[in-house]
Image 1 (cartoon, rainbow, N blue to C red):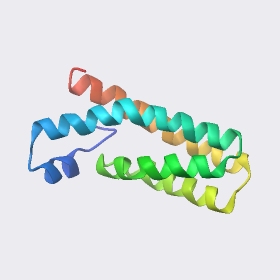
Image 2: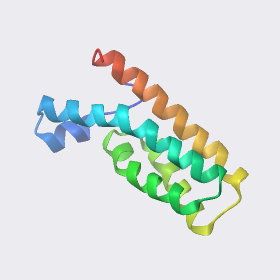
Image 3: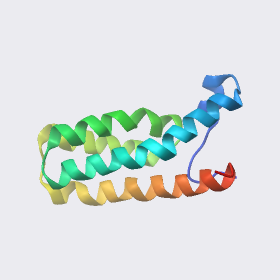
Image 4: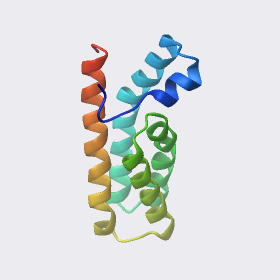
Length: 114
C-alpha cells in the first residue's frame, strides 16, 4: 500500500488506463529528481528565476501524485523565489521536498517492479 504517494487522481484522470498511469509514474521517477537538482542550483546560486521555473514545473506532478505536504512546500519555494528570500529560509523546506520525493520514488519502484 502506497504511503508516500496516492495515485487516485492519476487513475481518475486516466479512466483507470494502466498505460497512462505508467507514463505518469515513469515521468515522475525520471524527471522530478533532475528538476529538483535545478531548484537546488537555483537556491544555492540565488538564481530565483531558475528555482521558480522548476518548482512551477513539478508542482502539478506533486499534486497529481497526492503528495500534499510536498505540494504545499513547493508552493513555499515558489513564494520564496518571488520575494527573493535569503537562502537559509528555504533550505529545510526544500530538503523536506527532496526527502518526500525520494521516498515516493523508492516506494513506486518497489510497488511497480521498476
